[in-house]
Structures are given as structure tokens and as C-alpha cells.
Length: 324
Image (tube, rainbow, N blue to C red):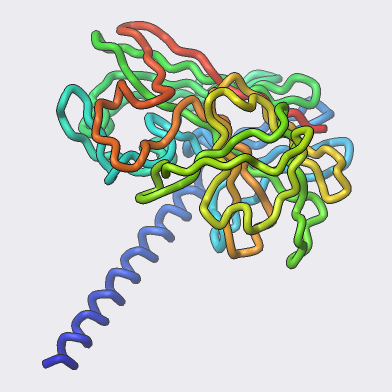
């Protein structure tokens, strides 16, 4: 009996793994076949994808250097997915709006959504998406969201316009997730690179249960705003700088030469890299929002850093990526 049970459990686990692999492969095929656009101003060039309106490449045309992580699925198969209408995790995968419980996956539902191309000019690309019956089932609002990429000298400007096309105020979070190579990365390096913050020794929140915020905080070892990056810095997931502490983060190489700078008016800045896999990249993430604190069961609108697009109104935000 015990042997039969173990065999059945093993078969069920095997079938589940096969199904998960098929779903992953199906997504990867869809992702790879999503249409792309390009911009080039002679100094830098970018490539973008309609799936998630994702920025997939930033190349320094003067040196030929690719700045963005090229999405190896063995480590992390994305470049810069769109995070909306939540960033991070909600407690137990659920949130409440006017007392009604809705389910929501980590980072929301636009990571795998196909956007429409609204315009493609000589210096800019704009994508747009709208609510659907499927999105309204888990996020009961009518909206449109535009993401615009503009090249200005050696800077990529990323602009968001969130429009509420319904008669109720719409609470939401939104964030960027751009990923950048560690220049000169070598497997086994103790120091992968450096970060320069626009504030010395900022504090970080910690990740607790369910991918939500824990109770502990700690001061980052960043005298004069400079911090060496090690693989162990991401053992507990992310560096989370909230409370409007930091509005610009520069990635430097191992010789402390600047590579790329991300700046934003967002109140939260995350730094993330996959731990334990010798990942050759790091994500510098401006968030207009934050994951739930562990145990939070209040209203969505009362979550910290929640933005509100008023009825029939707009909200604007974004960030800049400057090639150094």
C-alpha cells in the first residue's frame, strides 16, 4: 500500500512537472514570437517588445556594448517586464477592495500581456493596453495604460500614463524592472560591481513570509552612498529602499567606473539579482508602490504608496535610464 501510494504521488508530481514545463515552453514561444520595434539615435539604440511593452535591449552605439540582460531562461527569462496593478506580492495572493476579496499574482497581470503599438516615431515608441473582461474579474476597473520610450542623447526616458475610464477612483501600484549586466562579470567574483546611491547609508526593509515585507530593517553598508555588491546581498531576495530615501541608483563596474544610472521620482527603489546562480546581472527597480506587509488584510486603497487615478482622470509617472 505504501509503495503504491508513493508511486502514485511520484506520478502526480511527474505529470505536474511536465505540465509546468509545457506551460513555460508555450510562454517562451509566445514571448520569442512577440513583435519588436527599434530606435537608434546614433549614440544609443533600444529594442522593445509588444509583450508586456518590454524594453529588451539598450546598446551603446559608440562602443557596441549591450547594457541589458539578455533573458537567459535558465536564470531569468525576462529583461524588464511591466508591473501593474501591483508590485511585489499581496498577502496570501489576495487583496480587498471595498470588502470584496480578489486574487492577484505577484507583480500583477501585465507581465505576460500583449500591448498594442500606438505610435513609432523617429525618437519614440509608445505602447498601450486596456482592461478586458479577464482583467476586470480580478481588478474591477476600466483603464488604459501607455508606456512610452523616448531617446534623448544617451538617456532612455520611460513614461507611464494610466487613464481611469470608469466612474470610481482607481487605486493601483506600478513599477519598472530593468535589468543590467555586471560589466566584466566573471563567475566566482566576490565583488560583482558597485552601486552609487544619491544618499549615504540608506535603510532597507526585509522580505518576510509569502514574499511580503518582514518586520526587520537594516542600514546598507554604503558610506558616501557607495556599496559593493556581493551575491550574498540577495540571499533574502531584494534590497528595498522605501520612504523616498533614494531617487537615483548608478551601477558601477568592479573598477568603480559608472555603467548606467536609473533615476525616478518613485518613493521606493528595489535592487534585485537571483541568488545562488552566479547571475551576471542586477535589476534597478523604481516602484510607485510596494508589496504588502506580512499579515496585511486591509483595503487595497490603504496599502502604503498606493496611487489613485481619479474617475475619468489620469496619473503620470516613470523613470530615466542614462548610459554613462
